[in-house]
Image (cartoon, rainbow, N blue to C red):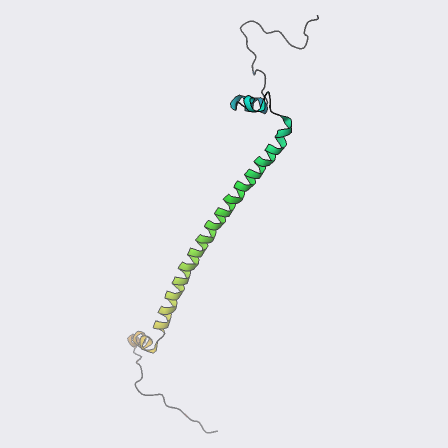
Length: 127
């Protein structure tokens, strides 16, 4: 046989730098001992269905997460609307109270303007 010309021989005591790279399937096989269930190696025909199911699971999780965030935003907006509605009701009540004739008379009394006790007189002009 001829000598291997593509690899350099390692000196004794030196180890390869990176070692052989492992694919994702060998990593899965090491982490999950599936040899008892699937036999040797992962069957290639199972990869697309498992990938599709994983994609559906991710879409389902994302959809639920988005829906829960939307519900939180809606509840927050409803609470703000209720607070603003209460503020508007309070301000309208204060305005109605302050625009009453007796309240206006109390405020302008400091300037020397007093409320009339007599009814208004109708002035008629002849043409």
